[in-house]
Length: 329
Image (cartoon, rainbow, N blue to C red):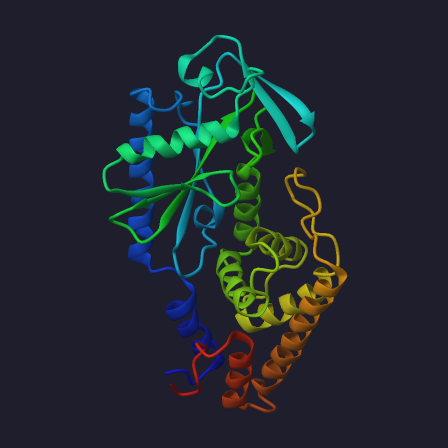
């Protein structure tokens, strides 16, 4: 029963936003099980040899910012690059990889110029996944940068990205066009962990709550990664208050302005993530500003002077949608 704003938020977050704890545990175990099976594929020479200890979990599930439903889990499978050389075509954007030692599995995945073709690498991985127990279906991800695996025993998909780690200590992943591009999810993980610790563990829950809001109000107009980056940029400069309603209100005010400006990739790889048109920026800014106004009114209604908790909760319901609890229910 939600008789306070805090109780309403707690109920909403538990029932509608956060992943189920048992499902999360099962999902993590399934991810580890899958990696061990992929290692077996490499040992049986169905795919290139792996670089031990360099495959990494990435994406929102790994960062603990995933919200319901749990529909995909991301995994970067790192191949051994022994004997390989990468060539910079365009810094951060386009790289090629060549091998001089004629490793059979890799040689079969090269193009006529002897360059390792990332599309062929993904196709090879996709085909090999059929040997995994419980296999249902494997496809190429719509961005052409990963293989997507469905297993009969789980409702979520696995997006598996083949990659290499360089001597310069960054990763090369498929660029969707046959070449490779630079990334390093470890930098994102280190940043979010540090800011979360600085704010006494309050950041991750706030990100998940705001991602629910984004899904309802901004939809897929911007990526979840860009949205998380915006929140991190804010919290890196403004410590959280510890009051969820106050922090949401402050973030909505920030987002209404920040969406109009450049949003830079913290890794200094992708550059400005905000490629929205001026019209789209203004539209999303107006949505955030309107909800900030509602949030501000809700906070005023919840003060000792006014103490109209029912009205405050109804205002939060306008912000987060029909699933937000009603007063007393």
